[in-house]
Length: 300
Image 1 (spheres, helix red, strand yellow):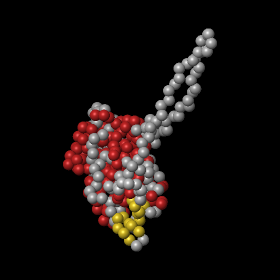
Image 2: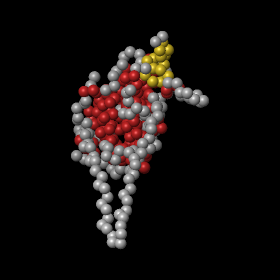
Image 3: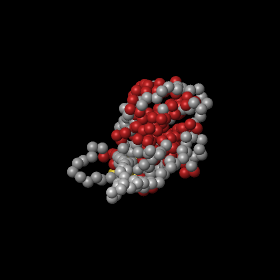
Image 4: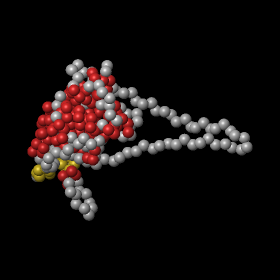
């Protein structure tokens, strides 16, 4: 099937997960690098040259099978204006194309309100990957930070997340709910080679970005919806300098919640109402991205 019959996603799953993410809590993350191994030159011994020694054979680990191929994404709706078949820009020159396509799909004012478009593809890939890890560094988020700041309320049994904190995310959640998921998936698929290239360059030469995207969505869908107030505690950092953003150092008192991934904790901080609404959109996008059954842990 031609790519024009497919769709477009990371951009809005990035609005759901990513956009939601930075909106909810920036953290820090470590960088990783891959070692490079050099082969040695053949050596000769004595007066007569010997056959060069065969270099030690390094077992080649086959790439894992692709679980959720983009080519399997099918679309019965008429193709959107942003999913037309046309040549792709290079990754380094993709920002103008993304600005144009996102503006057509979402509206120029909304794009400017929510997104950071410089190095956008790499921001999306980094954000999606980090949402499934312990920390999500803020410098690569593809969206603007939310207005206001994270707030808590003191109680006799400790601090809880302020119930009004969820209002900070209302505009974002409403925006996510107004976007057409099918058109988003169309755009994602039409630009997928750029996302895959960025994922490989990030340090996953045998990885497949769409598989990682589905895995992170499934992680987030497994996040428990907590109705009761969530207790948090401010982590003390010793040193001569005072933090300019102390509200970013809150952690969940419940160790099971604190051990969740960055993306899961983001959903918890949005509050139960927003959590349900975002969860519903994640399920909708997952159904468009893959026909694979949802893991039991992601069902609630």
